[in-house]
Image 1: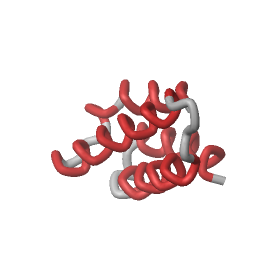
Image 2 (image 1 turned 90 degrees about the vertical axis):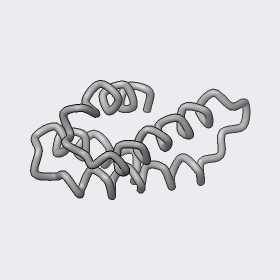
Image 3 (image 1 turned 180 degrees about the horizontal axis):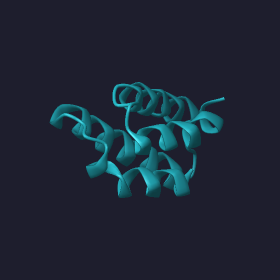
Length: 78
């Protein structure tokens, strides 16, 4: 999970997201990082954030970076 988040953060600028979608993605990243660091992480919250990642990345799925990230995201969701 941490590896995926690092890759996502490192590629944000190359995704071509609209400002609102980028802000949402960043907020979801912070939420997951907070949950990961929690002594009792809430898997439901993490799962909802991952679904949000998927939705946002699918909106720019025409980019190589987004497609690679979606491929890396798939095993984390299922």
